[in-house]
Each structure stands twice: as structure tokens, then as C-alpha cells.
Length: 107
Image (cartoon, rainbow, N blue to C red):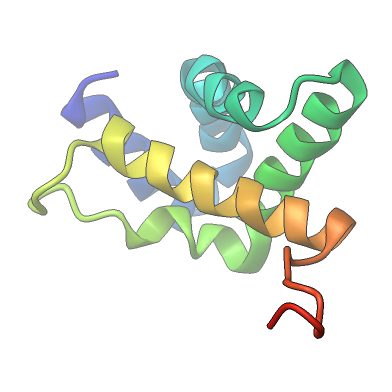
């Protein structure tokens, strides 16, 4: 996905054409999102649930998370998106399994 296409999609997400822009975003970025999710989960049901969670969180608050990307920043969009999806996968895992903690007797 080139930077012009990303800039156009992000602009449309801010406007009243968000539904079409969201569909275009998913079409272009789903393989990357799915790749990151599959690095966290190996069960098909967990992959689907985590992918859905990532998509839901990406849409929340009028695409606030996606609109934080800065085209003039140091990272490319694909690198930035991988980090965002990675963090959302961690959130999903914590939500379902809790945080890994040491037993009190060991700590």
C-alpha cells in the first residue's frame, strides 16, 4: 500500500465516507493484520476472535487509533500498523487470560 493511498483512506475516514474507506482499508491491510494476529494465536477460533477484536478497536471513537498515524513520521504505515496490531493482540490476550504474574510465594 503506497503512502498516497494511505493518506487518501485516512482523509476519508475523517469525512462522511468512512464506511467505504474502512472497507478499502480492510481489503488492503487485512493480510498484514492477519499475519500479526497469527503470530500470537495458533487456534483458528482464537485467531478469528483476536482479528475481530483488532478491527473493533481500530474503529472505536471514529477511527481515533488509525488517525494517529503521521505520514511525515519516522515509520512507514505498514511498520506502524504492525506495532498497533501487536499491542492490540497483547490487550486481547490480557483480556482473555489475564496478565502473567509470579506466585506470591516466589515474588
